[in-house]
Image 1 (cartoon, rainbow, N blue to C red):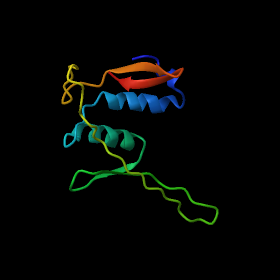
Image 2 (cartoon, helix red, strand yellow):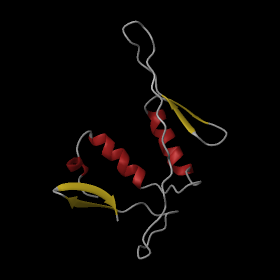
Image 3 (cartoon, rainbow, N blue to C red):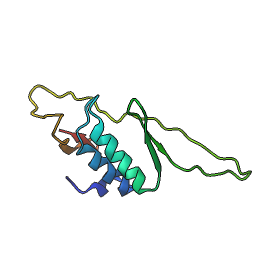
Image 4 (cartoon, one colour):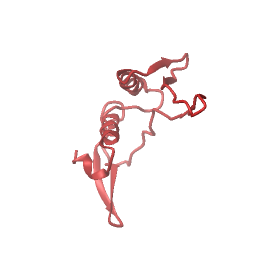
Length: 114
């Protein structure tokens, strides 16, 4: 993989992004990505919980405003990805990490999957 620094800051974003591209995660097969996110969140000291239908909840302590009120934000995201490819592409979404490449469009670099 190319040097991720060329894609901007913060570099940690791109490091996590790259790690996530290494983890196969088709719909209904999210166990590995769920465990990765859970482990990384716990390393940062955050509380985690997996509910009965395997949603992962990560609790990050909130800040307080000047009056002492807790400020909260709820973010929601999918852990899976659409596992589709062109007919001429050899890729096993159950086992293979994504192969990344850089393309240029209108003098801007874009990071894409092959």
